[in-house]
Length: 187
Image 1 (spheres, rainbow, N blue to C red):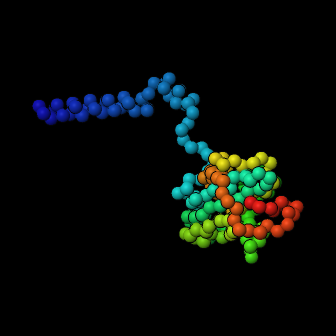
Image 2: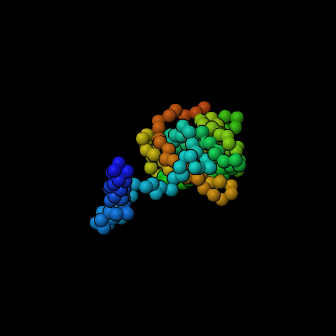
Image 3: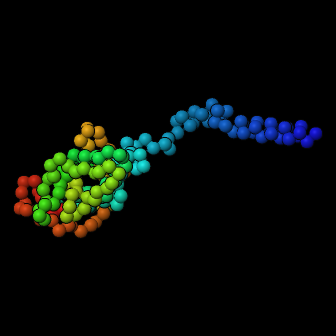
């Protein structure tokens, strides 16, 4: 008798679970699910854990009054088993150009060939060192904004980074030379 009762209870439980499964929902529920906004991420940003390159402590310097440029700083982490050569980048802001820069003997200059992030290691992009410059901004970037940055790699591929917050941070100890046509004043 106990076996029959246990089998009946198990069968009842299975029927209740089956009735609650998505496959047995009414057509109106399924139609609503098809027209409801998706909660699945469809962003082109690469998940940090799956990305060839990910960031730590990433920040975009909020625009300074009177300047049409800013910089991007971060620790870039190479999550692959191969060296990664970053040759350029773009961002979702209206700007004249996006350049990778270095500071040599205290003077900022464009860095030919970009930089290499060694396999399984990281490099720091920081004031006074290698960094990414956004030049000729059409509109200022305010503290609290987020900027989507996409790295361009030597092999022709791209890596979309997680959105980078803009913060008010002090300028580094770089000399930008004269106020030349490229607008390299203070960033």
